[in-house]
Image (cartoon, rainbow, N blue to C red; front, side, top):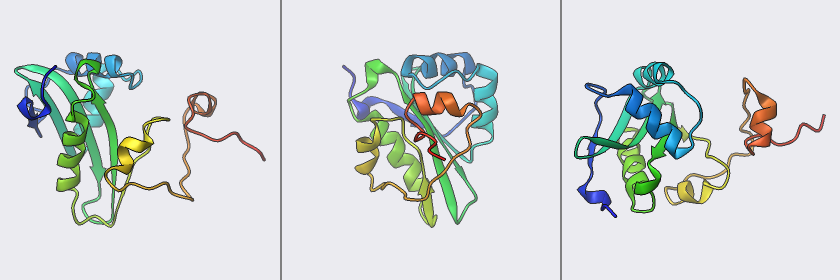
Length: 149
């Protein structure tokens, strides 16, 4: 098993293979964004972090930001073969370092992953709400509470 410290982090989109990123997302269970959609969302993210083992992409993360008030951590993905070695923690720490000074940093975690983010000081919000393109799917996957209107 690789060591997280032996892996190289990069904040650059240059020479990124979008199909390789798509394969990483599929392997890590982060949904169905196509390579073109990943190019769009990463290209529009203020901060990105990629982890490489040699030339192989093994992790990715991104953050949206207005530069002062609010930032949003999104899409922390690590290949299953590289999970549990501290790589996700390194990438989150890298992004949090670059987000210092923001008044609030928001994320929403995949159900069951909340304890990972608590280690960084993230806490549940009482008023967080979301609009999903497919609310039924979001509810089935554990992101939304049942609508009890």
